[in-house]
Length: 194
Image (tube, rainbow, N blue to C red; front, side, top):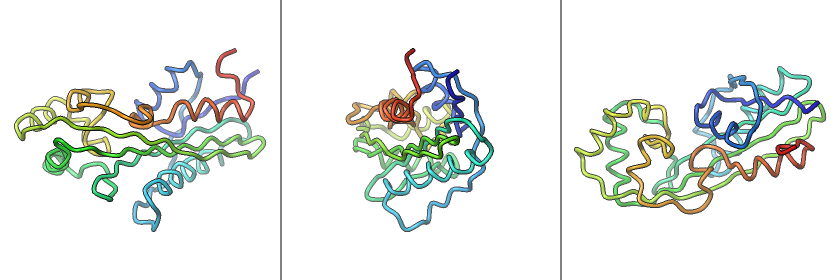
């Protein structure tokens, strides 16, 4: 019998990505409190936070494969988190207009039975179209859930129309480096395709 896979997130995007590659999984949202002020590079922070989320959930399971992710948006050398409110989201997207933004997703896969862990990351870039203030405002009104996204946009949602092009690892941009997840699961002996 294949091991139980546990997604340490309530993120609709991460659930969608796991379903996309045919995984059966249950959800146990991590209760780890993220600390964005740690003295780490954005990549180190994305990996560290994914590890801490996986660790918290792994403590509840004797057997299972915990999958946790954390996505960072980096712009002008700074990590851009979720907006505080609509005005903050508007300002963020105005800054992104016509620019390229880096997106890094940390990934941790934790086999609780063997205590084997894999932590890695994937990175992609998003180039935004030139956006005017009214277009941004209309987008935010049409997609209020953008307030729950780092950087105020969801590449798999209505935010897709704000984007001119992608480069790098597309799935890291959407929240989870799927190829690295697949390779990591294989290393832990989990068959994705039977």
